Amino acid sequence: MNQWRVARSKLFCLQSQNGNIALFVMVWNTPSLGSMKVNMDATIFSNPDSMGVGCVMKDHAGLFVCAMAVSFAGAYIPEIAEGLAIQEALSWARDRQLLNVVFELDCLHIVEALLRKGTDRSSLGLIIKDCKLLSSSISNCSFAFVKRSRNEVAHKLARVSNS
Image (cartoon, rainbow, N blue to C red; front, side, top):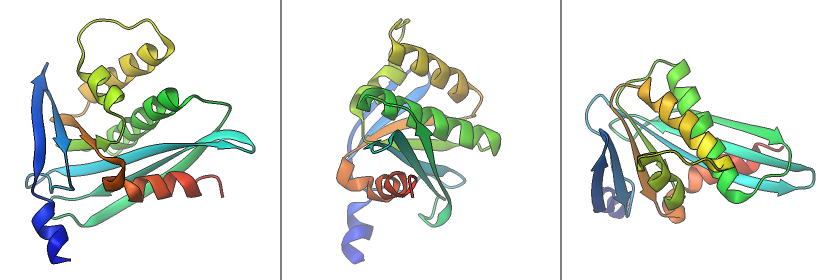
């Protein structure tokens, strides 16, 4: 437990663009006072073809607030599944009228896409466009990349969404 407390304060890198912040987190870090942190992940199931999304919310002290697991029918590629996971997490936070939220996910490509200017006309680009719109409705919203090993609770929730 003490190792976790020491490690959670370490950051790898910080980038900012368009008012959104991307933190490249080596280990779990508590958000600032009054903020929430939402970790999310997606998983793909082959039997039946579907995907699962898991989200876990913690407060500024790192205490569990709530969690969500949901599955969607259909065949998805990993990049689209991860995009839909952040879209679902953003909708979840918006519906709860949350402010000051850090969204952490383990797909660097999605974090970079969320921070990129311009329009991407691909299938993923349409999801990212919707995510940007959703994030604009959440005051003080930021995105962070975390290693998969630091996103295990959300991953396990996504895995059980098909049960």
